[in-house]
Amino acid sequence: MILKHSFTTALKGLKNHQSRSILTILGIVIGITAIILVMSIGQGAQDLILQQIKGLGSQTIIIEPGREPEGPSSFTEIFTDSLKQKDVDMLKNPERIQGIKNLTPIVVQIVNTAYENNTTRATVLGASELLAEILEIYPLQGTTFSEDDVKQRANVAVLGSEIKRKLFGPSDAVGEKIKIKGKTFRVLGVLPPKGQVSLFNVDETITIPYTTAQQYLIGTNFFNSIIVQVENEKEIDSIKNNIEQALRESHNIQDPSKDDFHAMTQADVASRVSNVTGILTVLLLSVAAISLVVGGIGIMNIMLVSVFERTREIGLRKSIGATEKDILVQFLLESIILTVIGGIAGIILGALLSFATSLILTKVVSSGWVFVFPVSAALLGIGVATMVGLIFGLYPARQASLKSPIEALRYE
Image 1: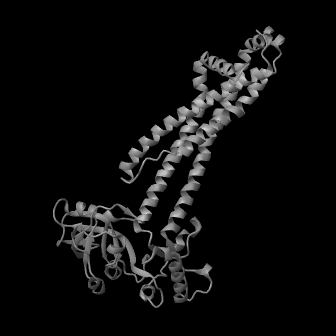
Image 2: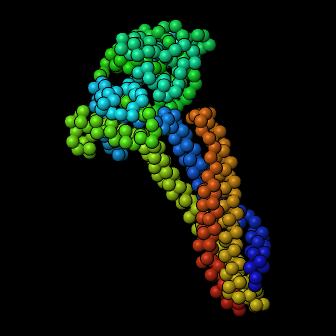
């Protein structure tokens, strides 16, 4: 029997049992849909996070206190007081570190903010006047604070667009006075809508001189991070190494494993995020793959039932010349056709659900969320579905091919 005839016969066999065939492929459909959905959401989340991280630019180095976290147990180590003003002054010294264009220390605190009867919670970002240049975010209205404001610990502030909307609505905010943690600040400017940049949402922040934040709001003399902008992107790795060596000398550290700080380029952060999201995606895929195994077992059971129900048919075909190979190929093709149809249906359903999910996440999580259709997942789905059909259909097909034609014709 030629392959074309075997294929036609297999299709007729499935068509004669449509309800059973549809129920059989449900496990495959669900499994492939889950794979497409998981990989689409995982890739979308990774792209969004990487896009936010890259908002700082490829010429930046982030220095944070504490050793680099290696897992949940060491996560709290980043909350230390190891970065201080002496470190900022040293990094600003071109005789110690060459190639640094700009840098700013960062202190962060979430506090209550008020204007007249309007109040809101805001992320207060203490920084130097160079933050606007490093982030390339300049006020849409008014201006930012100056170096003199930083030196004089001036009570001045630049509002993110969302904070301005919550406090002032459509009214002009520049020149007005607001209360931040009970202290009065004069609004110098309002930033344009920018969204998430690295670890903070610019629209939800109030930027003030870091000296003011340290003295009047937080009461500390250390920094949550230091952002460094280098002159030449090609030299960023060597500058990072020089920074680490200089900080070790400043902190009297001989053994790098005892560092009380860690420095990261945007490439380092992106790589770390990719690794984490990749691991999570693999874990979720392994869970989704269980449904494929269940679906494959279901196909094997249904095919075994089909073999017993069609015993007389098998005997009749063998009696008129069909070989064991012909019977084996027919039933194996039936199993593969079922799983491939289930795989295609799962890909289509998964793509539709992924698109719908991305629309919801765009509104709920971030406007920067982009729908991603994972072509690799679609190819994987078809490949896995075919393998499931081949593996779990082999035993029933083999059982059918081994039936004796005389005994099969006697079967009632």
